[in-house]
Figure 1 (cartoon, rainbow, N blue to C red):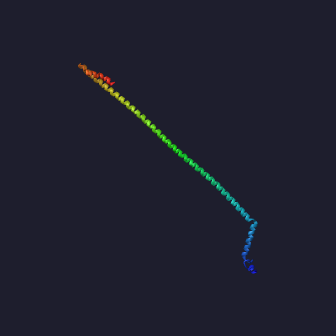
Figure 2: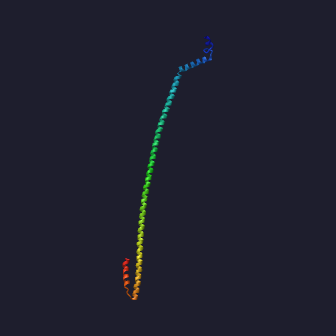
Figure 3: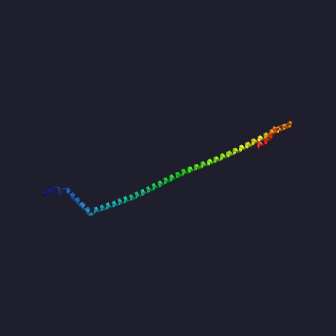
Length: 171
């Protein structure tokens, strides 16, 4: 058994034993110096910072979602308002079309009535002119007949009755 400790694995001449002993001493010094507590505190601080970052990210995400919901709501309101404006514009256009059509028909009817009135006045004037021309022609013819009759001295009863009727027929 002495051989194992002198020349074997557990021999103080073996370098691995000294590395192991040094490692155990190093870990002991680290533990005695409080390195694990400092590492734990550093990890806890890092965890707190990460949790704060996650909380901030969650808050920012909630704000972004609220802003997105508000923008969607405003978009829907704007689309509804635009649709309402389009419907109002179409209704106004139809109303204006009906009003314009009615005014046009009224204007055309008024102009037609004025034209008919002018035509009637022109017909009446033409008729009056024709009657006046016929009366003048009849008067001239009667004058010629009378002048010829007076010059001949003969009496024609048929001619006298026709001349008497001319005045009644022209009026």
